[in-house]
Image (cartoon, rainbow, N blue to C red):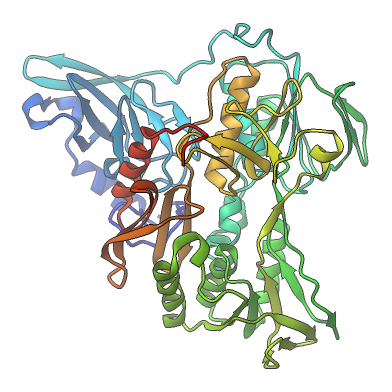
Length: 540
């Protein structure tokens, strides 16, 4: 019997990536070969900080030692089933090696996105020289809410934006026990979905559509989250605390989260003769490209951006000839540096991608794609990945402070009372770089949504997470932690050609960021170390 496929964000390469398809019998056999923690494990066999793989009856589990405390929790991350045994224990938490989700070892609670659901957690008992795992502990219950440091609880919360930050905020509010009205307004026609997969597995054809929603329809009903889809906001009145929809009723709010995300940069490319040009931002966009790809033989991708090259990789996996056109000299040079950018280009070239860099598209007429260098490419359609711009028009019209995005403080508060911003639009004071930054990372958006939710409840919790993103190119996945808009030194440890290395970005001798390939534990360790490094906004 074939089990449902497991969602993963990269092809099977490192040992902790689970197979997409596993047989039920094979899975049970593999688990049965693991030591059963019910029978006990010698304390002397578990060093401090160790993560030991095993099982509790028929369920895969890990045992973690932190000093003289022992914890037993589920072995797989609830986001993409990453093996937590290959992760990192930090304090009384365990972090996933795939996308840096963080769980409590004491309760199993998902503390940091991208995981939203808890892992199993068992009671551990020490008897003589052994540790025994006993009964499974119940899932944490929402606490009884009380007014926080910032005053009374909001009578209602409205969230504008149905992406990563918006859903994470609504989810966290309910997990914290907030029971008043939550309204989630989304301009998208689809419920919140796994946006990173739009250019990866879904576009590649290895992730079916049913994997894409982050939550089931029943989730919103059970948690009483009013989800307004295909709903655009016409006006935001901060004084009256009302929102007017373009189509639909007026919505009032007490606390507000702006999580409007970003829109693709639209290029002024003259198009005629039935030319087909696509942008990729929404689930519908990705579905349209998939439909066009079914009969396509050659495609032009405009822009050697992360989205552009992930699209190129996914279409090549479908057997389509791909040409990448872009004004940049080296892909990702501004973000990753020349050496790593050149390596990524070479990876794509080994898979048959043809690059036309240092130029751009002049016009498209039917299947003829004319470049500014006067060359021409015949293509069935064109995908444009020229970056995105934060969607801040609503915030501007409402009179909020704008700083190349929506300006927020360390609590993600805007210039208006009880109005917060998170995700692609938010520019916040980053304590690790000492700069005010805005980033367009999925995990950052989710984590900001979670912190904004806590601060709506008066927790006064600073957003101090280290930025993290990943990018997938065939069998190469790049993990990146930190934030380096500029640097004066890049150190490479390991080998790019062997696809096993870390790339460290420094300025003034201080580490700002680290990119890694096939060294996910190093990525987790770098995240932990960067969390301990905080500088003031006036530092360099």
